[in-house]
Structure formats: structure tokens, C-alpha cells
Image: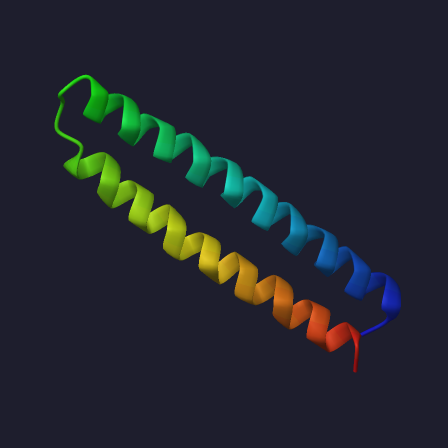
Length: 71
């Protein structure tokens, strides 16, 4: 794979990590607000767990792309 394509893949991976971080933060805020309001947070916490798992995958993929670029 040429350098330009690798850079595009890295940019996309970095964007996924940034977007994932925003989603996690927003969902954490939702869970906190629901808890403050005395509402059930079960489903919101489940979604947050899914977002965190997905974010871990985004980070792993980004790191893989970085590693491929350094070879």
C-alpha cells in the first residue's frame, strides 16, 4: 500500500477515535443526568458499555494502522 493510502487510512481511523470519544462522553453525561433525575439508567449504561467496546476497537485499529505505517 502506498504512503498516501496509508495516511488516508490513518486519518479515517483517527476520525473514528475522535467521534467515538465524543459519543462516549455524551453518553456518560446522559447516564449521569438520568441518575441525578432518579431515573432508570440500565439501558443507557448498556449503550455506554457498547460505545466503550466500540471505542476500544477504534483505538486498536488506529494503532494497527500506525504500526503498519512504521514498517
